[in-house]
Each structure stands twice: as C-alpha cells, then as structure tokens.
Amino acid sequence: MTTGWNKTLVLAERLRRQGFTEPLADYQDEVAYISLFRKLQPVAPVHFTRPGDPPKLVHRTEYDDMEMSSSLRVCQSLVKGRFQGGRVAYVLEDDLKLYATAFCKRPKVFKQIHEDVMIAVKESGGLTKEQLKEDLPYPPGEVGKALQDLQTAFLLYEQQTDNDWDTGWLIFAEEWFEISDDPENYEAAVMKVLLQFIESMVFASEVNIKSWSGWTAKTIRHVVSKLVERGELISVDIEELGKGLMGSRDIQLAEKQKLDSRIPRSIWMLDKSDYLVRAELDDLQARYKGLEVLQYLLVDGVFRGVVLGHWRIGPYDIDDILMELDETETAERKEEVLHAVRKIYEPSYHAILRYNGQEC
Image (cartoon, helix red, strand yellow):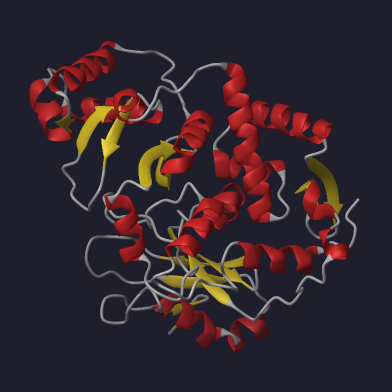
C-alpha cells in the first residue's frame, strides 16, 4: 500500500522536510529555527570539532547558525545530553524529558566509582571533570568513563552554556527532573520519538531506525509492531527502496496534495553527526569498510561518494574523493563535487590530492 509514493517522491519530500531544498533564510527567525531543530533532534555538534561547540543544522540554513544555536544554548533552550546509545547531542528544553526517557541507558553494573562520583557531585553542589579527577582515588580515564556512563543514564548533567571545555557536572534530577525507569513510560517515549523520526524521513526501514537510534532490534520490532497495530505506522514496499514504514498521515498525502517530486541537481557533503548520515550509517560503514572517511557525499538525495583523509588538528590533506557514479557522470560532475567539498575544506588548509583515484 504505497498510494502514489515512489523513490523519487520520497527523496524529494525528505530533502524538503529536512531543510535541504528549503533552507531557513532569516537569521533572526528563532521560531522557524526551533521548528526545524525539533524535527531533527537530537542534533549533535559537527563531527571533528571541539566537544564544547554548539550543534549546527548544516546545510539547512542560508546563514551560519552558530550564533542562533549558541544563544539558545546560553538560555538553556537547548540542553546537552547523551542520546542514541551515548552520543553527545542537544535537544530542546521542552522535549528533554521525552528524549531523555527514550534514550536513557543505565549501566549494566553500577560500580563503586559510579557511586563515588555521584556522592562527590551531590555533596559539592557541582564539580568540573578536572576537580573530580583530582579529588577521587581513580585513574583519570576511569573517572571520565564513569561520567559518560552517568550522563548517558541521565543521572548527571553536564552544564554546557558556552564553548568552555571545563564544564560543571551536576545531579540531573536536581537540575531538571527524575527519569522514570517504568517500562510503560519508556515504551511511550520511544514510540513518540520513532514517529517523529519516520515523519522526518518520510520512509524508513527498521535498519534505518536502528542505525539512527541505537535502540536494540528487539525494542524496535516491539514498538513498530504496536504502532502498526494502532494504525499510526503503515508497512509499505516501495520500488528501489524496498520494505519499510511510513506514517499513516503520509500514506494518502501523495494523492491528496500535489507534492513536488523534483529532486534538484545537488551535492551536499555531510559528516558523521548529520541526521541523514546517522539514519544510513550502518550501511555506509559497511560500504566503505576499511577506508578513512571524513565526510559523505549526498548526490541528488542519495549517498554516492565519500571524502577520504586522516583528520588532525591543523591543516591536513584530502587523500581522495571516491564517487559511486558511472565514469561519464563522475567526470562531468567533478567541479560540482569539488565545489561541495571546498565549502568546508578551504584550499589554504586542505589540499585535495586525488579525485576518484586520479591525481588532481
């Protein structure tokens, strides 16, 4: 049951919903920014940047949104946490409880170091990581790992309101609220987050869900089954995309509205933190296994290339740009590809050594 949907229409609508083909233009329009952010959260800082950097909606705004996201973070409208299996990212304060509940991951074993860190933070009213490393009788690496575990469990909160590395650690429940470990609350939260993911993707497989979320296959199967039973998700089979899921409200959309099915000729370079990359990361990592990937290239709505090189602090080279296009199209679109890469990798800091195996 696809009712007018095909691969081209899905990709075109996905690019529109995620802000690629209709990027935000007004740098002062906070309402529009928050609306798009809500569709794409949790939003991570750009990969290979400082861990204290604010999140960015890369390619989704015509302006540099660093100022917007920074100002929202200062007033704690954007809140830092560890979601999707422990990834650092930000969600809107209004949605913090929902996403914290859906992605809360308790340590399998609550060790003595976890308890000691919690006690130290609680008794002090807040400490930095360096203070904890100095005060506790554990190797620094173990303290850092314990902080990650407790942050992923939403027992500790890292107060990040600027780009400072030396952030304060506080008791999450005292700053925000307690996260219930009730299975029904967890299931309800996962369902709601999953429905938003499907809406932003238009169509997604269970592989996409697992890749993006970090939830177990068992959890995904259980929640999908319930949502299908309720009629909120519909199982579909779309030619060239295969079997997957769509929201019930979208099923008739292609017939009820005249959707724009044009996919603009376009190339976007996206890093590992990007929403769309995360949704296909398991497949991408399998396709490019063994390669040192810096960025992925989205060509006309489909991932069909990678930028290779060894990241380091300071200038470094782009070793190669590999394209999964036929020989003619690879040659014809060379300048277009290089332009997309050069938007991020400036010539003064990054030499491009090869294009599809050939020296530049």
